[in-house]
Structures are given as C-alpha cells and as structure tokens.
Amino acid sequence: MIPGKYGKTAANWLVTFSIFYLSAICSAQAQQESLRIATFGQGGPMEKAAAVHLTEFYKKLGVRVEFVNLPGNRALQESNSGRLDGELMRKAGLAVEYPNLLQIMVPLATTNTVAFALDKNIDLDKGWASLKEHTFSYETGTKVIEQNTQGFSTGHAEHNIKAAFRQMLNRRVELIVIDEQAGLQLVKEMKLEGTVHMLTPPISTIPLYHYLHKKHADLASRLEALLRKYH
Image (cartoon, rainbow, N blue to C red; front, side, top):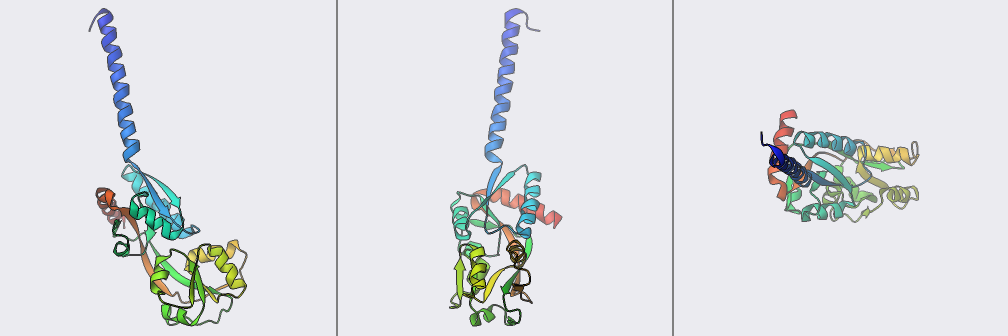
C-alpha cells in the first residue's frame, strides 16, 4: 500500500487512466464496427427478411448494420464509391460494372421475376424474349431486368414503381415487371386484387447475393465463411 497523499495520487491516476483506456476502446469499436448498407425499392417481404437475417450474422461478427434506402442506380454508385459500405442483395456478377464491390458467394435469397397485367391471358412462355412483344415498365436500377431487356423497344424504367402500376391502369403499358413478393405487396397496398393479375410461370428465377465494398475485404471473407457454416 502507498501511504498518504502519494497513495491517493496514484489511485486517482489509475482511475483516470482506466476511464481513458476504456473510452478509447469504446470509441475505436464505434468507429470500426458499423456499416451502412444500401437498399432500394419498396422493401418487400424478401428484402425485410434478408435484412434481418444479415443483421443477425453481422452481430455474430461484432458489427452493427444500418440500412439506407436509395434509388437503385444511385445506391450502386454510393456503394461502389465507398460512401456506403455495400448492397443488401443483388444479382450475381455486378463486379463487371462495379469493380469495387465484392460479392459474398453465398446466396441470401432467390427471387422470381414476374409480370403483372390487367389481361390475365397474356402468354410469356418465351421468358425474357416474350417482353419484346408487350409494352412494360419496371423500377429504375433493377439490374436483372435492365440487363435482360437491354435493347428492347417495348420497355420503360420508372423511378416510382407505384406510378408504373398507375400507367398500367391507364393502359399506357401492358405489363409491370417486378420481383414476385414486392409485386404482390404493392397489389395489396394499392387495393388492386381482382384487377391486376400476376402472370405465371415466372419470367426468371435467380439467386441474390450480398455485396461489400473492397475496403472491407477481410470482413467479407469472415462473413462468407460464417454464412457457409449455416447455409
């Protein structure tokens, strides 16, 4: 034991140092363990489930996640630039166009791309090629639709997907092309059951993957390993 005022001075110094040390650790953790991940669109059931799923896995790695909703193309620009840390989930192969994004090679979900129409008898048995024969709208930034209908004169991208549905109701387009779950949710929200019909079979079915900016390469590897463990 250190007697007298020297003992008190040493004790006070130890308390001050401990507080400073713990504050520094907490500050470093706050800076290092938080991600801002881009989403786009209406946020249907599939996206919400994927966000919850991903948040739980990041929590296992000691990382907090915040989701930022932006228009589709802007979301990709922000993620690729590093101003945001990644994309919730997108189609495979985005690195060709956005080279700073690392694809986590374990799918988070599978999406059916479908068409909604006023006429339930429209035949889309040729898949994507069928859309050359019908006017359609889709949400801007939906890469799976953009890339598979490139050069089609019948297609039109719309920033507001609800506005696209209203175009169809006014018979300006024949079809709305969209993810199945998001489309069903919109039909319900807009009270269009019985008026608007989902055409079957789906135009396409593909897996969707999470992406991180390349500055998080180490975290991307750890996350992929964790997802593989539970996949």
